Amino acid sequence: MPEPLRISKIKHLEKNKRRRDFFTKDASTIAKRILGDYLVMKNKDSFLVGRIVETESYLGIIDDASHAWGRKITERNRVMYAPGGVIYVYFIYGKYWCFNIIVSEKENPQAVLIRALEPLEGIEIMKKNRGVSELKKLTNGPCRWTQAFGIDKRFLGKSIESRDLFISLGPYKSFEIVHTKRIGIDYATHSKDSPLRFYIRGNEFISKG
DNA sequence: TGTCCGATTGGT
DNA sequence: CCAATCGGACAG
Image 1: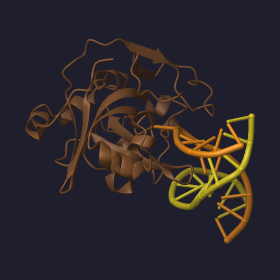
Image 2 (image 1 turned 45 degrees about the vertical axis):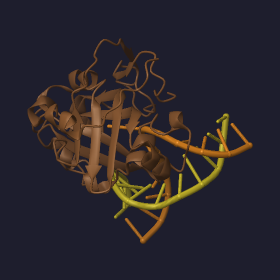
Image 3 (image 1 turned 135 degrees about the horizontal axis):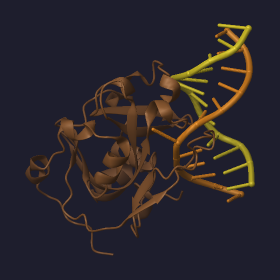
Image 4 (image 1 turned 180 degrees about the horizontal axis):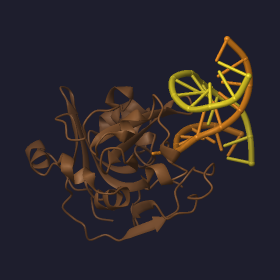
């Protein structure tokens, strides 16, 4: 494994920010293309960066694992129907937050779930937020990295191209992408085994799955 | 209002 | 393998 890339220049990350129209493509395309990108979060007293190493796509109306299956609309999921580029977070199992990027066009509620990151910057803050010191357990799960980053309901419906939270194009795309079925969706029937989970082969921060 | 359940995690 | 834990979805 190469040593994690050191990122210290926020300007460089901002220059390569993924723009809103990037997220108008379909979920599986986005889920694969943001592998190796940086997820950047900054505010007045913290600067957190992780490399995206695992994602899943949710295909919306036609996908019985999606919250928007059958064009379902509820108070929780209504931002899924917005144009691509907004954030969909939801509370799960009484204590966790799952983080999705809504993609595709308006009224086509596709989503990309970010399942795991490789921690790069702000590791001490992540350890504090998680209450965990082991590097490999900081961000290797969909609700672990959100806890490390302090993600919660405040981000629901916000843009993924904001000043405080954005995705930045990663430099190396020479890895191999593994396709598997998605994790934790046994309630689904039709799409249960579709190969809509994607991760960087050999990366040590992949969730257990 | 009441019941059921989860795109997970952490401990046994 | 299994319990934790509580907001959201949905039925009545």
